[in-house]
Every structure is written in C-alpha cells, then in structure tokens.
Image 1: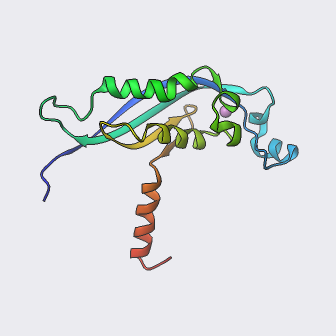
Image 2: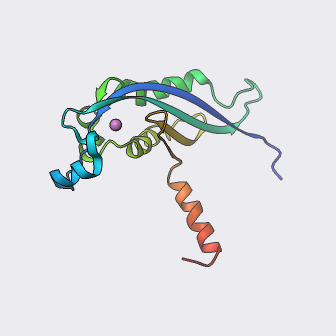
Image 3: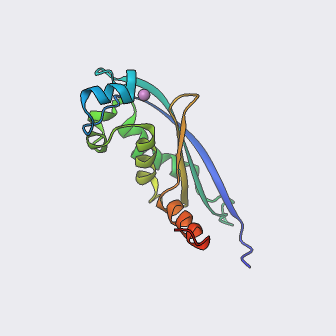
Length: 155
Ligand code: NI
C-alpha cells in the first residue's frame, strides 16, 4: 500500500464581470422565456468567487504540495486578468460561441487551469451569487461514473 499522503488544497479568488444569457440556438421569444431578465440586452454583472482545489504529495523539502504564489500567478494570468471587469460575451473568445452561464464559466476556468504544472487540479467551483454555485471536476469524473455504471451492469 502506498504510504504517501495525498493532501488537497483549496484557494479562493474573486473577479467581477458582466454577461448576458442569450443563446443563438433559441428564438428571441425562447431566449426571453428561458433566461428571463438575464436576457436583458444590456447585460448585468456579478461578483464571482472561484475556488480552485488542487491535490498532490507534500514535498518534504518545502512541506507544501504547491507554492501558493505559483498557483496565484497561474490563476491571475489565466483567469483573473482575462475575465475581471470584462463583458464575458464579447471579451472572452469562448463566450462568443457559448452562453456565459456559470456552468460554462466553471468548465472554461477548469480547462484553463488544468495544466497547472505543480499539482493536480481536482475541481473548480464558481459562486455566481450567494445562492448559486457550480462545480466542475473535469471529464475524469464522467469516466469514473461511467466505470461505476458498467460495474453495476446497467448501461
Ligand atoms: Ni447573471
């Protein structure tokens, strides 16, 4: 058995951005019905909170799994700088094609951070308001669920 101890670290970040929920795949009427006031053409803003969770072994030399300064630098460069005080629909390329819901935002942030070299990115959680939060743990979660389903013999 492996006696190495895996530790998970969570760190929170904040940015403010505006968006409009509108899908090109829906009619104007359907957009208004599905998204309600979030479909307002002039958009609206949120103060987003992002929690990034990474895991790894403790480096015996430093006592840490990853240097927080390195994680901060990565999140700053990949997420905060490109998203903060932006209109997501227009200023972040992926959201010209995909509706900037918090689900899609969560997935995009995970994609941007998953190559962080010093630790494994386990999940990204985004709070849109104090009532709404979404979490994404990558495709691996789906792979694991698929394996479990197969194990149960129901596919
Ligand atoms: Ni919104």
